[in-house]
Amino acid sequence: MNLFRDLGKRAEKLKQQVAASDEKTYRCADCGTEVRTDREACPDCGGDDLRRVQ
Ligand SMILES: [Zn+2]
Image 1 (cartoon, rainbow, N blue to C red):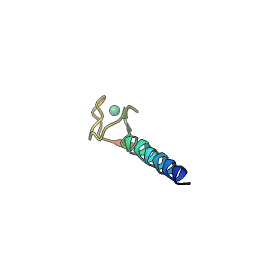
Image 2 (tube, helix red, strand yellow):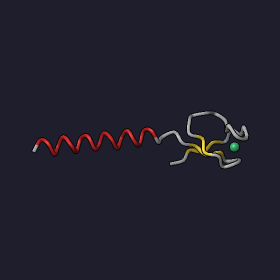
Image 3 (tube, rainbow, N blue to C red):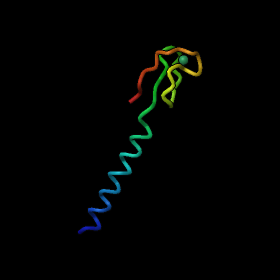
């Protein structure tokens, strides 16, 4: 049925949107603060060693 195929596609799109919104999460290697944007330095301690969180 086309209806089910359509729902499947929508669910797939939704999953991709969720993954995309999650994709820029970093953690400061110095103080452990989570940084949720693509800043170049930690807003807390100013450290620039940000590790990507999966
Ligand atoms: Zn920090």
